[in-house]
Length: 170
Image 1 (cartoon, rainbow, N blue to C red):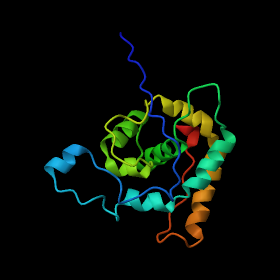
Image 2 (cartoon, rainbow, N blue to C red):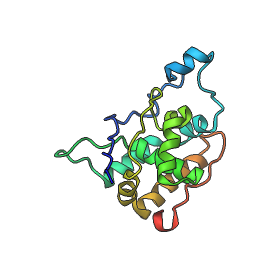
Image 3 (cartoon, rainbow, N blue to C red):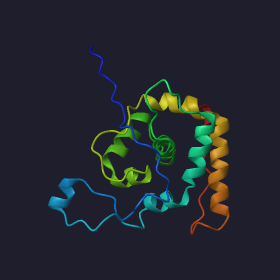
């Protein structure tokens, strides 16, 4: 049985949510050719949730516990990692299906902080094993608290539930 090589994610630096432009998100070319494109729907749940999550704080927490190593390839954008975990658990998907959904869905890519649609998977599904090791239950619980406090302070229009810490970290 031939082993398929792992595909690496593009090296993208973290972009603060304050720098992500909703109107500048570019769709794939085939959508622009076949369908009149008026932009992403601002009321889509992933667009709304993207603005409700304190990405800067979550990325800072992640980077404190997982400092970048200077001797190896640059790490994947922490927002992509954290957003993928959120997508996985909100939609109750397995690792491979999560990567497939992200690859196929512009709204999920916007949620992850991409500036335009990309046809390639953001990372190989096997990376979820490493992500779970890096996050751990303690960091997930701390991030969940940050999200919950952010939703409680009145800065968001619709309250969001705390992010569930999975049993056994599936």
